[in-house]
Image (tube, rainbow, N blue to C red):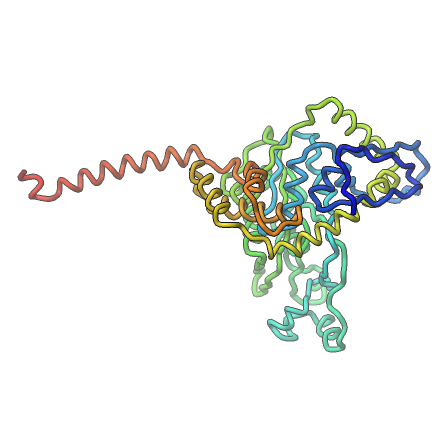
Amino acid sequence: MPDLNPSDRPQTYPPEQPQPTPSVRSLKELMDLVSGKSVATEQPQQESGLAEALPFPFLGLVGQTEMKLALLLSVINPLVGGVLLVGPRGTGKTTAVRSLLNLLPDIERSSCFYGCLPEDVEAGGIDAVCPDCSRKYAEGRSLVVKEPVRLVELPLNSRIEDVVGGLDERAVIHDRMRLKRGILAHADQNILYVDEVNLLDDEIVDAILDAAALGTYTVRRGPITASYNARFTLIGSMNPEEGRLRPQILDRFGLRVIVRGLTEAQERLEAYRRTRAYRIQPRQFIQQYNQETLIARDEVTYARGMLPQVEIPPPVAEAGIRLIQKLRIDSLRAEITLFEAARALAAADSRTTVTLDDLRTVSPMALRLRRSPFMEDYFAERKREDAQLYKFLHTLDPRTNSE
């Protein structure tokens, strides 16, 4: 297939005409190509008035290269540990997160209200699932359905019962006690988006972080106990003007992106044009990116499948460790995020070997906001204290005193 020159601007086609499928070699090349695409605008037409979720196309976002790359790496490789977007309001953080959905392949999920899965039966027997699912399992019917990945957004006013789950009120009416799944269980195999994460109550943040780290969590309500899968990609955003984030929480996010406003006049004008076109006729605007979106979804699926084959050569790994040591970063999550993000980047570029350039690209996202001046001062003070302590211990020796 002939390669496309990213400097060539593709022609603008009317929404009703299909665009030719571009020829690309990797997800990274596709992003570079589509970033220069122009769009057609149409006059508003009368709509049905029915609400429908139509996310802004991910490939239609202007600029913000680091943010888009971080989000892609997090969905290609869950071991990256999620993403934290830090920046002022109005910079497109939430729009970018919501636009990810169209790039993700379908997954298998439970068709049951209580989240029963075939592996529950395999692990705990037929009594481990609800009566409806036990009957379906005995009849040989599937307990799962294939559905698109969902974006589960955590409301700022959520209670801890909403997040982890609680007693099912419908079951209580019939004199039965049963737990219903919370937001974390519904986020299993989905994307959990926590906007304004710095404003959440501590107990809710702790529950989210524990579930994200373990992939499961347990709910106890009186004599009833249930464990749920919570294998989600965690994405958070915050405006630093509204408050700081606890260091414990900050350390649990893998990639950290500083999202600034667009600085180039042409980019800001293009962003306005695309936003206007999307608001006037969202379907027609999305259609203009349909072919590239389908290609990008295939590339994400291919990168996920290729990821287990990606290796980090010893010289590259040693260079990464030296960088972390020079920055005096204590948390071992720095190495995990750095290397897993580099592997995801190589897979996105259709390569099986991580290079130093991959490390250079992901290092700012993986390592920023990890140094702690407080802990450096704390350890320095403890070192001085220990030195004085050992000096005094030396004087306890009678022979030393006699000399």
